[in-house]
Length: 156
Image 1 (cartoon, rainbow, N blue to C red):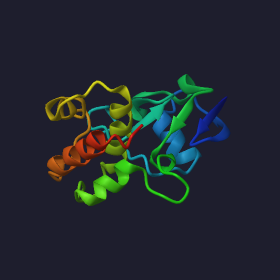
Image 2 (cartoon, one colour):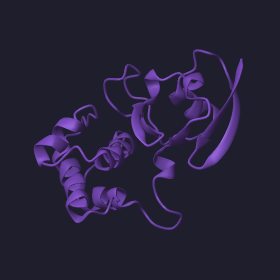
Image 3 (cartoon, rainbow, N blue to C red):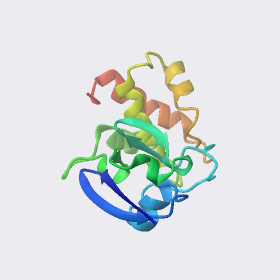
Image 4 (cartoon, one colour):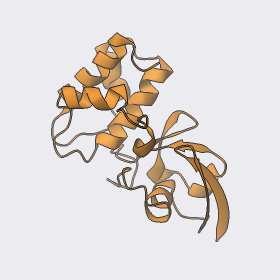
C-alpha cells in the first residue's frame, strides 16, 4: 500500500492505496464520492471525467498514485454551497439528460472545455465533447446547455 494525499473538492484526504488503483476507484471506493461514474473502464465513454488541476482527465485511466498532491474536482465539488453551477442549471433547463449516468462526466468535461476557451462555435463544442458519450441520445440538449452557458459568459 502507498500513502497519498489528494485535495478533492477543496478537502484534503490522506489514503492508502495499492499502486494499481485507479483514481476513479480511489474516489468511489476510498472516499465514497460516487458521483463520478464507472462506464466502460477503458477511457472510451467519458463517464469518469473529473478535473485535475482544472484540466479534464479520465479517472479510470489515471492511477491514483500519479495524482498524489493534486487538486481534484468531482461533480460533487462543481457547485457552490447553496446554488448549482451554471452548467448544472443549464443541463436541467435544456433537458440535457435522460438516464443521467453520463451527466457528471459531461458537466465536468464542459466546465473544463469552457475554461480552456478553445471552442468558439457549436461545431467545435461538439468536437471537443466527443469523448463524452451519451447513449440515451441527449446530445442536442447537452450541446444546447453548454452553448447557452458559453454565450452568456456564465462560466468565468
